[in-house]
Image (tube, rainbow, N blue to C red; front, side, top):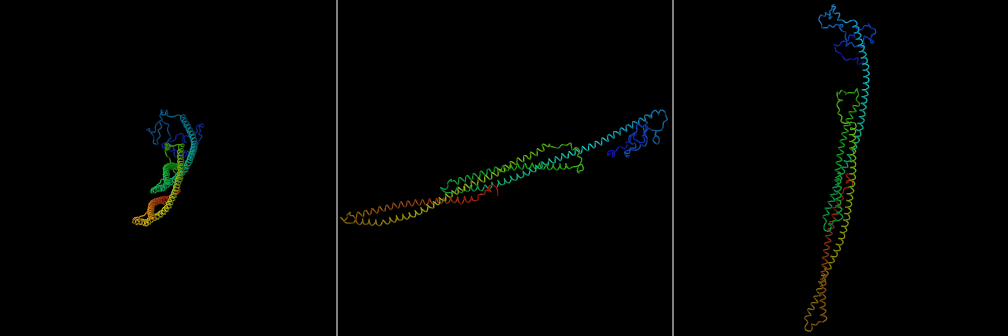
Amino acid sequence: MAAYAHPSPAPSSFLPAISTMASSYKNRHPRYSLTHSLSLPWRPSTYYKVASYSPSLSPISRGAEGLTENGMLPFVSNRTALFTRYTPDDWYRSNLVNFKESESSRHNAERLRVDTSRMLQDKEHQVRITQSDTTKNIGERVNDIGFWKSELIHELDEMIGETNALTDVKKRMERALIETEAPLQVAQECLYHREKRMGIDLVHDDVEKQLLTEVDVIKSCQERMRLYLDKAIAQLAANRATQHELEKDLSDKQTAFRIDDKCHHLRNTSDGISFYRGVERFDTTISVPESWAKFTDDNILSSQSERAASAKLRNDIENLLVVTANEMWNQFNTVNIAFTNRISETGEAKNKIHMHLAKILQEIFQSEMAIEGIRKAIREKGAPLKVAQTRLDERTRRPNVELCRDTAQLRLVNEVNEIDDTIQSLQQRLRDAEDTFEAMAHSKSTLEHDLAVKSNSLFIDQEKCMGMRKSYPSTLRLVGYS
């Protein structure tokens, strides 16, 4: 009825057929009576008007000359003009034809109207079903995007957490690597200081061996730390690249979710809807649901793979920090034990030197006293020798036969010889005592030099080396904790 209520406008020159006029309907043939009302109450008067003159069936055109003032042809009484007119049968047949055409047109129009109404209902139902299916599909798409968006958010949070954890471990390893410089410098300084030992103490002892081992252990730990530090830097770069892909995919998913959610809530009464002619002919899609889901799934799988590699590397770094700290501390303790033993040995040797030096000094003192006694004894033997020799010299002046080899003479000669032998023995003993004194003086000098050497070695090991080694970093600092 809406289509009939608002028909499309017809040209102004359009006139209805003569058969549609009310004045032309005459019930001369009851068998051809119309089934509908002839008054046509539904016909709008806007588009129809009554003709100002009755249509003529004459073949003479309207524009011919000889029209009367009111526009009618003059009646011609010529008989020949009667042959140009229609017969009543023609007139009735024309009316019947017009009636049939009118009825057929009305039937066609009614059928078309009914079909159109049914088609409109069908199309409206189809449009509603199609729109409902489209809305349902868009809703399912929104759910799919929401699912993958939640998966991306979860994986992105996990990746960010793993990246932060690996960054913390990397910083710990950097701090631990810096902390190893101090023990390495201490060990090298100990080796340099021990090169200042003197004489026999400049020995390749167990302390030096353990110090060299400590240097090698620390350098080996540093090399492993630098190797894993490079791995951590590369892994962090891979993590950030994967995180960037996840963030980009998530951003696209959020944009698509917002657009599809807006589309899902659009209705026929919504604001902002408009015509976009030909938009359906442009296919800007670059993926299908399978490739679309596979793209995000591949990103998540790649992130999970990188995250697993990052977690494994982080655990390896944790273990490495513990292992290197234990190795350095074990070697540190071994070096300290070697230092302690060496200091003990050096202190014991120093004490023995002190004891021997005290004894040698005592003996030197006694030897000096003995030498002085021998010299005094030799000096004291000079007077008896002088007396005996003087007596012999005086008795050589006895006259003649008085020069008798008497017992006194023999005794004086024996006395002189005995005193000479005694002096010779004392002088030999004096020389022996002086040689012994010189040997003891040399021993004293040796002991004093050795004592100075031991004191220097003890000072280097105990004061300098062990003093520096007291500042060795703790285990927590060696594993990277500040």
